[in-house]
Image 1 (tube, one colour):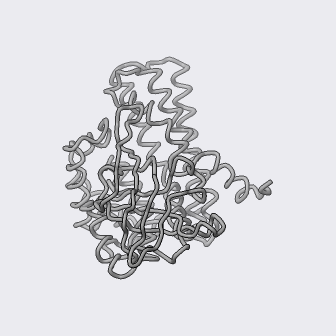
Image 2 (cartoon, one colour):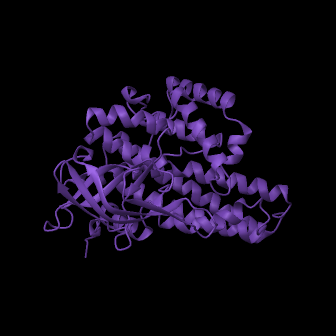
Length: 380
């Protein structure tokens, strides 16, 4: 793994670092750790997303024709290092930009690409992803939400749950069953659904920390235009696989987030004089720091595979598993030392960290991927 950066890449780093220094405010950095998404904070983040998009910094990996910079893999790595170092907030449409946009670029019509992608990047439109159902979580192929063709429309009935930003979304990338008689992986289609259509009911879900970042969404005889189909009819599994492969490639950059979070924890402990010379606390901090370095190596292996045409999927899935476990252990340490006094942020993280081994692919599923694709073990 050779990650020596050529001079032009360092120039890219300097340009981004200077732009962030001039435009990223203390208010935005503080809002990154905000407890929940109140309306004022949400609109401030939306404005920040628009600013980044207008300056070409919102989606550097996207092709230039869609508002990106066509960044190389190493440029994307530098971008992640610098935005994380500066404590820049994540995009509101992070799922849309990492998961849905690549699918639109690959399978969408020209009208869909021109109409939807730019507005997604600027957060003019908020996107959600309709995958999980009460009976279909990690096993997407078990979904039951139905779409029946009726003239120029699909008529959709069913329910989705744990839909991130579902109650704020303007658009949904929705996975539905269009052929109930086909094998379960082959009867699924993907629709791009306008969330203002009649028959859609959204109920926010309040989580342990009191936030309502998720929702359950009900579809009652919703008529979706047939030209909202993304990809081929009954080819939704292929679309979903493309989407999820982009998401897991993003897991190769997660060490930067954990490093930044650990630095914040050390600063907060020092500010409250809580860590001191307690050997148990110092040992736990050291162990987490070492595990983050291991995670960095895992991520670099995934990046190296991407650069050299190897299989990045297995190592990225393993990195995601390690990232979730580190996050949970760091949250436990913060709560043990700071309790509820860490400006509320660490008490909040103690609760939200429980989702780190579930969201974006459960640890159980990712460990199966590691067993099969990294260790070469049989399925049974």
